[in-house]
Image 1 (cartoon, helix red, strand yellow):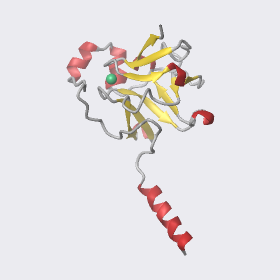
Image 2 (cartoon, rainbow, N blue to C red):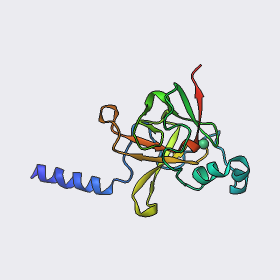
Image 3 (spheres, rainbow, N blue to C red):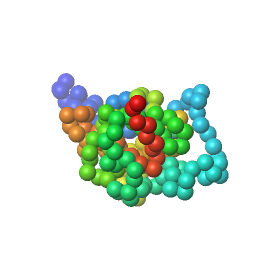
Image 4 (cartoon, rainbow, N blue to C red):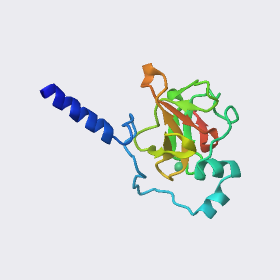
Length: 165
Ligand SMILES: [Zn+2]
């Protein structure tokens, strides 16, 4: 009987679960922070290139194998191209074969937040910059199992890279 109750509770908890808890992602909504970067759409349009605006502010996706960083193997830090927030590290990058820069985890627990994305008839988890709420990409659970199993699939155009000096 006790086992049955535990199973019922486990099913109920699973059914109610919203977004999965991902290592280093503590936010499932735009986090409040003192250095938040907020601009109107017109201001973003002036600040970003058309390609950056389309992905970062329009939740677009760049073509696979088209970006600057999918094949970048230099050591350094990747920053949000819209606000300069550090979002990923080269030490967490891996060759996913997808044509997009792929990471096993974000830079730290303050760098990104996640939300459900049901667009295009797919259920995906969208990855957002925690400082300016720009779209960076999506996170999937088919990453390297020996490194946590996650694949942060990020658009190159959403990033800038600073090589470790
Ligand atoms: Zn940002």
